[in-house]
Structure formats: structure tokens, C-alpha cells
Length: 429
Image (cartoon, rainbow, N blue to C red; front, side):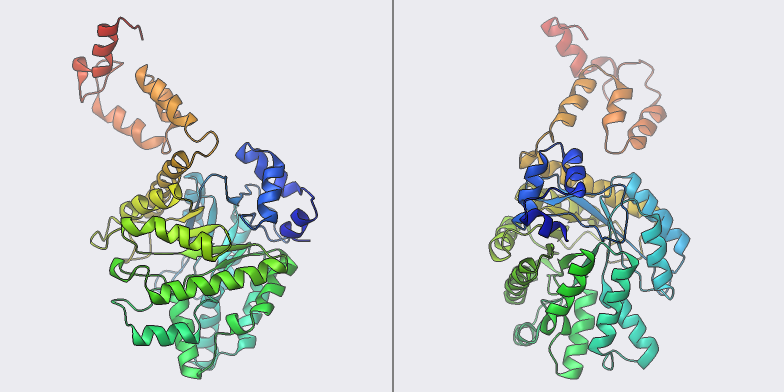
């Protein structure tokens, strides 16, 4: 049985109990959330995961880190090092976006080494295989597509990004209403090329029941991809994006009826004033399913700093009800991320997720902030660093400053406002 089927029968699974323990909530809350389609636990029945996570309503906002090889950089060991660093920095899940020559070997190494749930975008392997076999995308068959889904399921992939919402109707709409950047989803662009070349509907949409059957057999969570997400803030919340979102809501119902857990993916590049509306629209059109957003990036003018533009949008999205943030690194739009890029991306996204959790009143979210504020009041540097999201950077800054006096920093020194206030109010440290 899938987690959803367990939940519907009123049963609390081992996985539900583990998630409840990690969240500090009653297991019944987890069961009810899964039963309603508002919480998912990504876990393929063929994998053991030491750090399970629940994603959804009334749970802490989770963070995903993307890794993976490319044609120009296919060192598996480097990607495994990025995976380890991302998990150490707090990533709740990993996605393998490999398009390099050893795509199966990379995936299997990540699945073997990851302590957290692992997701993939199967269309990448489908296209890489198709180009090797046929020399073009057009000749790839639907059977080729489903063969890859089956193989990845057997390997133990915990959640699939499936771009089932890019359909002929939305492509026609996009033709009539062009964007600055028509399609920025790599998976969406591959499928659009296949569909246009063949004059056929997207197999992931027309044969969605086959996708569901594979997912149900292995209890894979379907992350319904936003192939038509905006890649420029001027394109946000337009007709093609909304058409796809409505389609994803219909597909969510179809999968949910058959006992398969579903996440909905969302934008993308979105100005601040549209983020709340995007969250509310997803919840309305997609039956309150967990919402997984890339950023959102709130401006397009900051290449090299898009971990910041994404953290700004991610904090607001999480505070308004988004459940799952996909990290963005400083290398976004520029190159394959390095190890340091991955660390910065995860930390920025974790800050955004935590800020969102405080805003939406997640149980215990503010406790750590209160604790670090008390440590700051007491000038207890060690305790501050223990509570920090990144424990190494503040310690390094502190040591590099040679503060001289033990209980102050070099910004204020003897004029420390906290010490002045203590003397003023007669309060001892």
C-alpha cells in the first residue's frame, strides 16, 4: 500500500510516525494531512531513507537541492561531494538533474549515498537516450518514455518531476501570446519539441494513467512539473502558466483518486506583489496539494546573486503557504554550480524557509530565534554559533576580527548598545 492508502484506511505507518517525531507533532496530524492530499512523504518502497521528511500543511517548509552532471562536467565524485555538502547544510531532499554521459551511474550513486529522499526529472534521461539511439528527439516513442520511468522507479527514485501539464492547447496559446522567454523549463522544452515535431499530445498527459500506475506500484510521489513557469518576471501569472496550473489540478485529482501522493511545482520568476496570489491560486486549483516553488526569483537583474533574489521570494512564498522550496545558487543562469555555490544556495533557501515558518506560525519555529537572541544578549558567542544556520562562517568572522574584549565585537567595542542598556537599566549579564 502507498502512504496515501494507509492514511485513508485510518492507519498510521512507520514513516508517518517518524515524520511526526521529527516535526514534533501528533502522528494523527500527519495521517490526516496525507489522507486529504495536503501532506506527502516521498519514499520509494525500494529505498531505506535515514532522514525522511514530510512536506505540506502545518509542517516546516522543506528545501531541495539540485545536483547532477552535464555534458561539459560529468564527474560523479564531484556531484556526490555536492550532495553531501547540501545535506550537511540542511537540504531535506536532493534532485538529480544529470544530463551527462553516465546518467544511470550517477543516479544510482546518488541513490546509494543519499540519506534524504531523491527526486529526478525522467525526461532528461529519456532525451539523452533518444539522442543516442535515434539522433533526434522526434523519433523517441512513448514506450521509450515509460521504460525510463520504470527503470528509475526500480532504482528507488522517491519523487518524479513529470511535465504532464504542457499540452497542445497550452502550446497553441503560447504561439498566440508569445513571452519574452517562451519556455525556460528544460523538460518542458524537450516535450514541446517532441509534441510539435510529431503533432501529438504529450504522452505523460494522454497516458497519465500509466504514470500513475508506476508511481503507485513503488509509492513514488509525483511532483507535477511547471513546464510553463515564467522565466522572466514580466511573463509571470500569464495565460499559459494559469492554463497549465489548472491542468495540473485535474491531474492531481486523477492521481489522488488512485492512491498516489502529489506535489505541484510552481514558478519561477515572479514579482513580489504576485507571489501571494500564485500560492493562493495553486491551493485553489490543485486541491490544497503541497506547493513546490523554484525561488521564486523576484527580479531578473541580479545574475550571480540569484540565491538572494530567490530567498526573498522564497521567504514570502513560504510565509503565504508554499510548502517546499527548491534552492537557487549564485550560479543560476550562468554555469553548473560548484561546491561552494551549492552551500550558499542551500543556506539561503534554509533562511527563507525558516523565515516563512515563523510567518505562518509553524510550531516551535521561533524557539531557535529566541534562544539565539538570549545568547546574543549574554554575548555568549559559542551558543550563538551553535544555533546559527551556518555554524562555521560566524565563528570565522569572529576569530578574524581579534575583538580584544571577550564580550563585545569590533563593530561597537566598548560602546556596545547591549552593555550600555544593561548599565542603564541596572541589569546584569
